[in-house]
Image (spheres, rainbow, N blue to C red):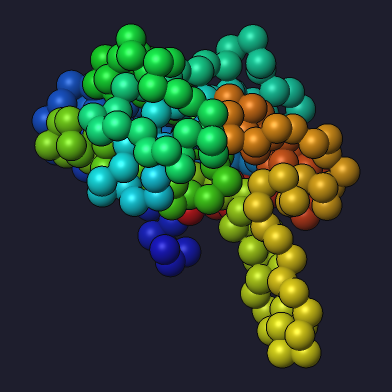
Length: 235
């Protein structure tokens, strides 16, 4: 996404609000997006994490959602939300040990369509923060599209992208790879260690959302200022 495209989220939301066929999506877009020059200290963030049945957004399903609102100074655990969702297809034997969610836990879980209003209310007007945007943004878009016939898009801050800019790109990283150095891990847990953040168990959507919120707070403290504009981070 080019810098010019990144700066046009407000204009894009206006068009999406006009064209959205589903009332829930229309209301979501009508709440708008913060101005491109909003300082980070004034940004309302919400960390979002999914657990899924696999890694292909076109065929796999979201089975849990965790989210927690926060800003640079505070993570609002009291306002966090967590949902289990019933997928259209059976869980695979390989995925159950990965996320720890079993068939029996999902027997009475709702479909995404039943809680979509609540999820949209939680992220509307906020900047969504994720660790690896190709899961949360693409899975959410594909899942909504399967149910409503139209997808969803929104700006995100990707904490993995922030780590990749330092440890996977640039001439120093290329030279290290050429001489045989193993690239730095930019996984959520390993990224947190670089900022002396505590270890949390992984692959629970709410725990990972909290971990992602803390990681972004640390990244901003180390690399940006409170007055840096949101456009420096969002994608």
